[in-house]
Amino acid sequence: MSNRSWRIAIWCVAAVGTPAAIWAIALPWPADSDLGFVLPVPVLAVMALSGAGILLLAGGQSSAGLRATMAILGLTLLGYPCLLAMSAASRGGPLVTGAAFAGHLIPLTMVSVIPVLAVSVVTARSRRGWIAAILLVTAVTTVVDITGVRVLTVLASVVRMSGFVLPIAATWPLVRNTAADMRRRAIVCGMASVVPVLVIMLCAMLGFAEDALGIGGAAVSVLMLGLTGCAVAIAGLTWGPPGSDRPG
Image (tube, rainbow, N blue to C red; front, side, top):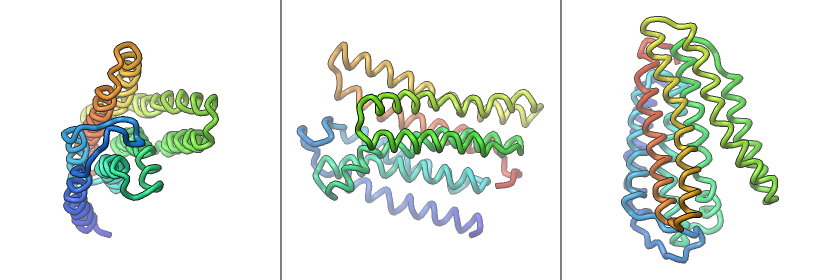
């Protein structure tokens, strides 16, 4: 499929997905839903619109690999608030509810993969091993979570959070071996790799605040906005640096 065809296809998904998100967000969200929290409509709207915006950026991405991963990030961020709203409104059954509880996993994985892929495009040096490691951490910790064994799930959460160091380790060493324009672009990709760590710090602070102040509802909203901001920042930072002259 040509770049133009990919661009049109991705933009069509954004055009169709946005009205679908609006419909889902408009569904009633009972305070006693199985999710255990309530997200205000503005928060859901920001998440969905940000996902649509990332899809538009993906359509203009020159690198095929970055275009695909950025499209996945945009699509899952667009779909996540839809799944949450449908689950809260008891639409779609157990399948939708399960997807809503796991809806953060793919966006969080993509925000780790994209900076690594971007720096490999900028420097023309493969980072497939690092990307494979990120995907392996996600797969293994997800399987462990499914077991439901508390000790293992806690350990899996620690491993998953620690896994956000992998993009930093994969990108910044390449900065030292670059110069001039390539170095500037590699540094931007390195900056993108740090963004998920900032979100992890936000998660930790929100956890302490929730326990100390009992602000569970507000904490979840801020957390969702943090995830959204993380995705938007990484999409923006890695959209331009690879350069239109780089191979996909």
